[in-house]
Length: 447
Image 1 (cartoon, one colour):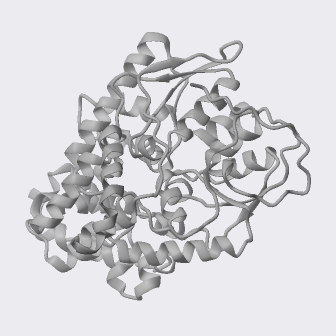
Image 2: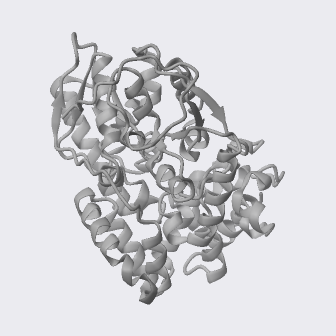
C-alpha cells in the first residue's frame, strides 16, 4: 500500500510504526471472509482491508477523524482472525490499536458514549467495584423497560448468578517438593464473575509442584482499556503489574507468569510492544512478557495427574480468538482435556468470534448478539454435554445463548485430577458417559 505521510509525521515513532504496517498490506483480500463483520454485512469498510484504508487516510490527515471512520473502527472486534489468514502477515492488531488511540485523543464522542466508556474502564478493571455493580444491576432488572437502550443492553449481559472470588496477595505453597515458582494474574472481571477459575488454577499448579504467588500490587492487565483506545490507562495498569512481578522475581525468582484468561494473556505477552517507546520501562516490560504463559501451556509442559474413570463426557471446545489468533495456542487445551478422559469436539466455523471481544458485547450489542447466536448454533450442532473455553468473556457470552454448562478448561482439568465438581456442573443433570465408575470427587476447595 502506498502512503503519503509527511517527514514531520514520520518523526513520531508511533506514526512511523503505523506507516510500516500499512505498507505491508497488498490488498490480496484473504482477510475478508475471515472477518465476522464483513461476512455479516458484505461492506468493504467492515473488512480488515477496508479498515486499513480508513486508518491510513485518518492518520495521514491527522486531527479529528470523520464519524464514518470512527463507526467502522468501533465495529471491529479485534478478533485477529484476519491475521491468521493474511498471506503477508500484516500486523493489524497493533495498527487498529493505534487507530483507536488516535480516535480517543481526537474524536469528541457524545456525552452518553463518554460516560459509558469511562464507566466500563473504571468498573470492569476493579473486581470489588464490579462485583458491587453486578449486584446493583440485578436489582435494577425489574425496571429495565424504563431505562435507556444502552443501559438495557448492559443489563441484558448481566448473568443471573455469579461466583465471586477476589484474591488477596498470598503465596500458595506447592504440594510436595517445590519444582517451580510462578505468579498468577488474578485478573479483574473474572474475579467478580467466577472465582472458581482461579481456585481451580491454583489447585492444578500446586499439584504439579508449583508455588503460586498472587503478587501484591498486581492489577488488571490493561487490555480492556487498551482496546477502547485508552492507552495511558492501559499503560498505568500494565506498569503496576510489571513492577509487582519484578519485585517477586527479585525476591525469590519466578519461572513463569501464568494467565488463565486468554484476552489478558495476549496483552501481557505484548507488554514489550506496549512500552516499546518508553526507555525506562521497555526492558522490564520485555522481561515480564517473556515469562507470560497461558495456563494450558504451563500444564501441558509439566504433565497432569489424572484420576482414572472420570468418564468420556462430550466437551465442545471453543477457541477464544485471543488464544487461537493472538497467542496461537490451540493444541494444548485439547490435548489436556483428552488426556483427562473427555471427548473433545471441534466446533464448525471455529475461527469465528463469539461476539464477546472484551467490551464489544457491551458497546456493540446488536452485532455481538448475532455472533453469539451463530456461535451457539454451531456448538449445539456437535451434540455436546458441556462447553469448555479459556476466556471468561467467551464463557459469559456463550452462556447467554446456551443452556448447556459453560466451563473454563481448568475447571474440568481440576475435577479430572482430584478436585471438586465444578460449580457449573454441580446442579446439572448430565447424561451418563460410557464409563464413569470413579468415586465421588473431593469437594474441598483450596480455601
